[in-house]
Length: 185
Image 1 (cartoon, rainbow, N blue to C red):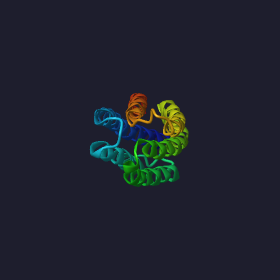
Image 2: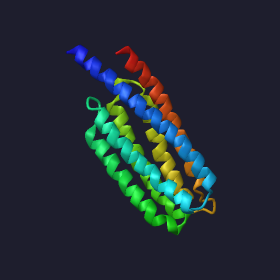
Image 3: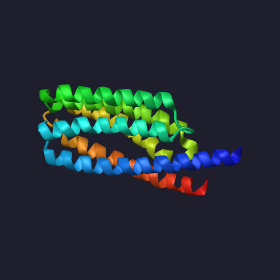
Image 4: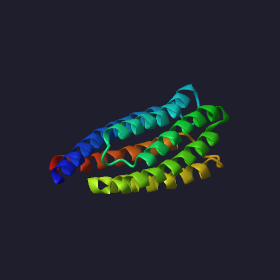
């Protein structure tokens, strides 16, 4: 029984490690492109804004498929739904300006951060989850900051690039820790 559990944990850790590396790479490329697109919504930045949560939907679906033994399915489905609603919300509010985008993104960052905390805490036996726990908490705090920034003259989409970069780094740290779990089990 222990061997089966260890093998499952090793496979899950390896699959999540690979997913997290992809998420890291995506976040860095996305952040660079958004930064280059500028501080106000334009065609390129609107496309990027919608792509980010859609990528999160794809990542949640992948997570559901690869992490059968370590997945809090309900939380992953909640994340999937939140990200899909966010993509729709960003597509519809982008024409209203950076402030509207920051409010939608902020609400998503808060709720997705809470979901990420739930998922990471339930997976802590896999290792490498402290980075995801910290990332979830920072996401919730950053979401609040985005909502507050929306009502200031400093409202800018480029702050989202920093958020994505930091989130990507946390995915990389977690991937590195999961690599140890995958190798040791």
